[in-house]
Length: 362
Image (tube, rainbow, N blue to C red; front, top):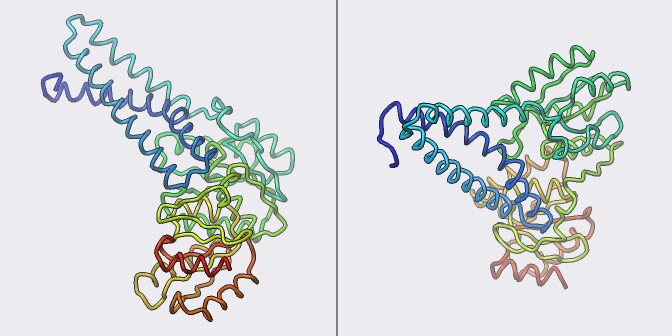
């Protein structure tokens, strides 16, 4: 420990770490974290690999911010000059406040966002957090409502932005519809149910946004296009998330059986979101055994998840991977199913999996 432990000294360290952590966290968010995610997507890394890479960057942020804060706190506590003991915490506070200011003014981050109106479909337009001027422009163009995906749990800035948006929509004469979402963190069942209702029965013209107009917006794009066939989605953030350009998921290899037919392991939640939902897969076939309690649980979860997105799902358990008659029936069924299509068990590299792959390729 670089300084003597006491309530006062710990308080000084906590104050400095809070502000330095916030300022450095903002810098990492728009810098290294974003670079890591972009690099992963450009190189077709799996979502689990991307997640691990981002977690390494976050761990690095925690370590770096702790070390810097510890050194600054030590300098403050041991400084002989009063001006130094005051100046260091004041500078830290200024840096933390500047980071908060930037997060509360997303228009300053336009270079990191999509355009205000990224993609326009029939009755739905998607983008990033809108300014009052943009909302007034939407009103003039016939928009009736704004669907905000901001979540109160994303503190401290999204609750403030949501309150600001309520006031701005009132001034612009638009109805604000709050549908809070936390992508990849929770199932967002309530939010997805509400979005589905808007997609099936749109009553007006909607502007849909999250903070930067990226992950949450792209998830909603896919859901709306699924439930409203008059909409064709071309979501730039999901380009490159194709199974064609990746060879491995967390639980095993990905094998191309034929054109738009892939044998994969059971995807993680992140892989499901990025490559199955986000990648445009039109059919999922599970070879898992419903008589096994653990596999039955996974089958039920998968059924419910895919039902939300109206992606056809069929469970075709194989009694034996050596039963040629069963494998022939599987091939016949697959040939008539919509493509792109994925087939999976839990792993994809076992002897049984390799036998199935060999037979399916014949």
